[in-house]
Image (cartoon, rainbow, N blue to C red; front, side, top):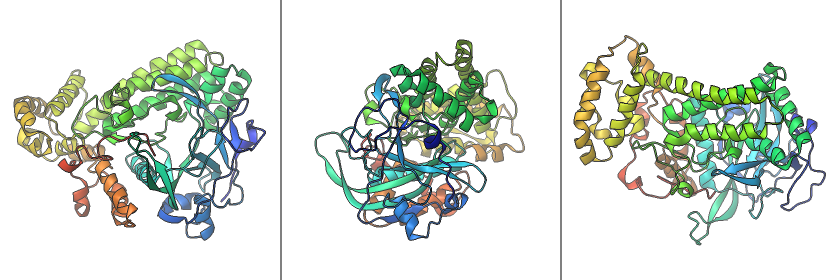
Length: 503
């Protein structure tokens, strides 16, 4: 593996490597060492991704490196320093509390692959925590990272998942009943892990020199095509963020914790915590128990929250970027999202051409899906299985989670189907729809089944799920049982519906 650790080489770090949590000023990172674990063993390895960076997943040294027990030549472990707005409130310094970046590997394609261990021990940003992670959250992040990649969504990737052989104590429900859980470490990969919060913290502290260095570094390393144009840079960030929100919304994905420290400067999906997928359609559904009352990060609010986060970033950049460019970027976000979302839904519906009332058609579709409590993923897929003129409400009855509500919504469904049928049936309609509507997504109940089995030493459920998610848009008869709607037993079970941030 070849490393080019520009973040460490070109930006200021903390002068001390002493242990212990503390405020870190005037520095963008702290040098740290992962804390060794007792008995590491593989749970999953991404061999294809490993090959891209010339890693050797079959070597004992690679296992030890992914467990935090050993550094490979060229690795320079750090934890980075950033702040953020959490649930709309400024939280001050946050930083990598349990994430340790090992270095920036250069792949065979010349691209940059920063390797980051999550759960490898405490850092100066861990506050009162232990820097560890449990198997359930680590497995969820590994699976979803690769599933999102296969779904065509910009995302961090997952290189490996290692069981530590050590227990971790967590209070899953924050109810005063902590329990021991198996520990794990996931290695996640991205061209950059720089977040909105990296810029917010020095701006909030009035450290303009540090902020300027970070801006120039990010432009040079991560946006070289812009040749240092800060105005165009912010507009580009806004566009990438808008396109990411289109992807989340078109697939029914709900992130759950859209804090500014969880937003990537590259427009990647980052920090998979209490995420979920729309099952019965509900714009105000959130998978995060912490957000259950306010529902700030609910499915239908995600586009607005992303724009709010961009506004927070713009505020941090006010002294460094032209105000007109910042305003243009925020406007560009709204226009890009609106146009992109409508185009994505036209594609999901197989509409051959654009009509002025398409947005109304989409809104009425979502309205009857909500009224009938129909499954988001399966309903869109079912729309392609018959010619539009042959579809009737009965095609969707089995996809509802509430028989009574479906019955009351039938006339509404039939009315919409008649309207939809008037748009015709283009020759490539089914192919285009099946390429836009996944057959399988990593629903929380599927992930929980994989977690339950893995905690007992059975990795077969996990491996089957990973294999199925490699081709999420394909009909795969051997994995048809994984393409079903949520079973009733999972409606309110922990881990299958809503989740806490505990991990």
